[in-house]
Length: 152
Image 1 (cartoon, rainbow, N blue to C red):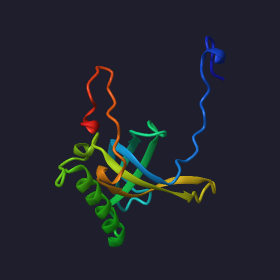
Image 2 (image 1 turned 180 degrees about the vertical axis):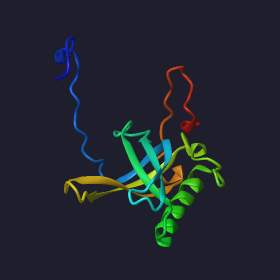
Image 3 (image 1 turned 120 degrees about the vertical axis):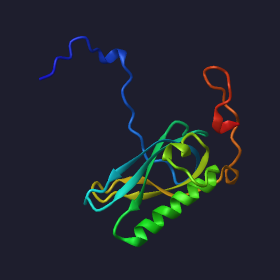
């Protein structure tokens, strides 16, 4: 058992479950990235956390995995092509570290697929493009009143 003394649910809003985003194009920024080992231990993938920065789904998160090291050459080729699309979209052609791709606007094409484990629908990233391919976003002020870098 855990002591929950002092917790009062009437003072905390309950979590609302998120349905997947509708398929479409979303203006996003990469907010986090990390290289991780594959489950089989025979490769590595770059996990990207993306955040929608405009529209009715602003603040929602998406994730993508780019398998950059793997025995299957086609898998690596697909991942490198996606990384090239991201680099071209954000204007960073030769990043030394994935952090150089963070907080720069990119249009993310999002689809839906059925999860194998739960049979529920989930989002999948279909591709990346330059910001110009989406409707222009209105600048939003930050807490200190300045325009965030992705809106300049």
